[in-house]
Image (cartoon, rainbow, N blue to C red; front, side, top):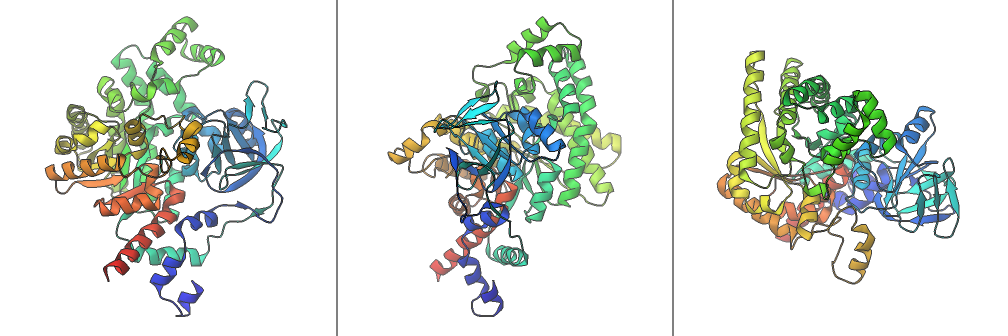
Length: 526
């Protein structure tokens, strides 16, 4: 940057001289490479940066530690949606299982938390709250450790750190990169804090807002569970009516932070059993809270459990079978849209239907959402616009994109699930053998880290081509974690996609990578 400002090199040369992946080191604390490293566990470097803190083994312990002002490292076998609050409270996350697109990895990258997953060389004992390292050392709750998410290592004790370097030169470099790039960069943001981070890194909007993460706050979780245990559609609607103002406030805040930039909101996606306790003690507390017999609560919880929940009653299937959920969310979105307009920050929200595999699903959900929009307009005596689109995560949705596009203004390819379903690989379990597969040359790279351009990429190209054949103005994007990967951005540019969306902390890297690709094309053309 100094060379460019002195006129020795041009802006384009300055942009090209900075490696995009090197930016992640400037965004976070890093372990000082000059210091000693006492490594006790190795795993996958899932989210960059480093942090020191006391070991905790439950989300409750992480929240208690944060309340005391003590940084902590949350260790789990693998995280689930109910661990969100614990992750928010932790300085870093370490898991025994998982891969680059497992729950812990995706959420940690979104929060900017250092994270190491798939550390299978350690043994975790959650009951006694201790972990045993591969060399036999035992670490207990409260022991101080350092997690290096950039290297994929856990270190004993407190390591020396280097601070982040977000200075004026960093910001100016990225503003120059924006002058050269030719594809949009949005952020995946689930909370107002995520949206604020996205704005700080100058994302061009939110490409994926996962609404279910808003339901794990303590007060909302209780109402959510009441809704799940409701006996009739009327009881379900009554519980959802209590969630409505909370959800509306979330969207008002998001719209306010994004200041008129596009916000793409994914309707409720996960299976309902994820909101229920998993142990007998939790079920007993729930039975007391709901004033129902423990036997009934246990039976209903068992009935909700699925053999293969990622392929079960989730996504649009919930919206079709229990339409009251999507009705409430649509009402919250549209009322927040009107409120934002009143506050002088008009927005055109993008409502996205998840896990679609058939045109009829889109027709049914669209009809109900259009009906909710009409009711909100009539009640408020005010008008607003919105876009309705589909998250393409199943191979069938990509293959049938032509007919799905008849009812959708945009298609956003969720490449995490699309990769999982195309390969028949569990993104949470593939970490166990992925290194072996890559070393043996079965896969050239981990397909959850680098977009598989031959298989998954072909589905993207087919979906894009068939969708635009039906609807030439169809907006196309990628909102999986691949969106922050330079090679995947190159693929999307060449395929004519409008934008990519990635975790907020990967936005600077994506902006710079997109500029590199455009500048190299320019050199190649000349």
